[in-house]
Length: 177
Image (cartoon, rainbow, N blue to C red; front, side, top):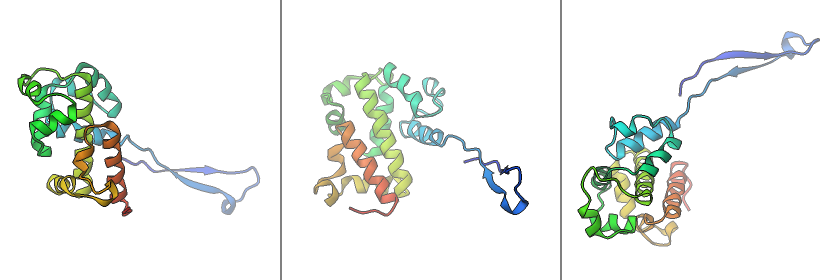
């Protein structure tokens, strides 16, 4: 976060120096840029033509609409240690269909959106847990707050992924349910 400090003063017509209110003026930059770049990196798409224009998470909408290449899914599978069968369940597609896709072939909107959601989840998990390996262990652990289920069991829905992001946020803040 880049900060620029300037002092802003508020005075009343009859206020003395001791009665003036002073507060620092800080310019904040958008922190979602780093989240967006981590998401792109998680899919192995850093430096790729279609992904260069992404500056924040809102920019992913056009990428989702046009579809992301299968190679992004393959890279994410490697990083997340997911099998093709697990990815088929997550994307509501058969593993045979996913296997037939060529590396540059675009995924559907629904599949692309799920890949972006997964990449966001895994990049956030890596950030909070300190390493992708530690986060993958957490994803494979049976957790009481999730009804004695593994976090991976929730990857097939957007709501499930959002639940996991919320749980990661609680872990980051030291709140264990």
